[in-house]
Length: 343
Image (cartoon, rainbow, N blue to C red; front, top):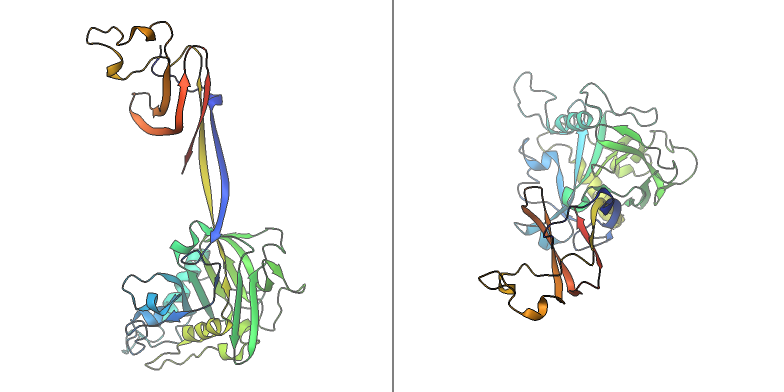
């Protein structure tokens, strides 16, 4: 009898598959209710308050007021010259150094790895951007291309947005933030019409599914929804531009996106021949002198396989596989046990 059997190369198979799921909390596919704000988040009088940088959005008001409430996504506004929010310092030389400049610099650094590169949307280079950053816990490893359906509505004006992954047959641009698709008018990854620049302000923006980030072009959005014209005031209260995009999302009441993750599985095909594992290694199987506890097991042993242990070369136990029911084994039987490890 052999206690340990080494797997052959053909006994181990690696498989990887993509698993899609609803992104939002409680396995919700379409987010239709939105809540934001807190005393600190909306403290626009403080140039360094979180509300100057981003607005967290929750599914319910109960989540919003809870200390452990789950954020669905955040909204931010960035301006490359710092307009739209109060400067961090009111002294000489502090002009332009504000939350909006920080946001713009942060995202162009993430996308381009260059603080001098500006966002250009199909030939148009605006001074500012809107950003929707989906909470990492919602997207798992990334967003599923083609699943984005976002409706913006304000003052009776409506815009349906998606990425163009289906239209472009998956030919994404690669950036430091992963794949980049265009944000277009349409649904479920299919662009409406044939022209990317559907407005005088250029295309609507970019979608980065691997990072869960959507960057929107205000110049294009405001040609369809006039309430999305950013304010570039540097007054104490700031422009509250992130709030404007939030109101448009609230009015649209429909945000659909799926999460996507790759699950790798290692299969171990454990082959038990008729000559192997016919005796138990349980100490109760033998007497203290090493003889069998039951003489009937000498020539015609009958045992049951209940567990398969996976060991390394140092005979250290790494994993245990439990069979759903005991498997009878003797010299007249062989078995093949398939073990699956997901990671």
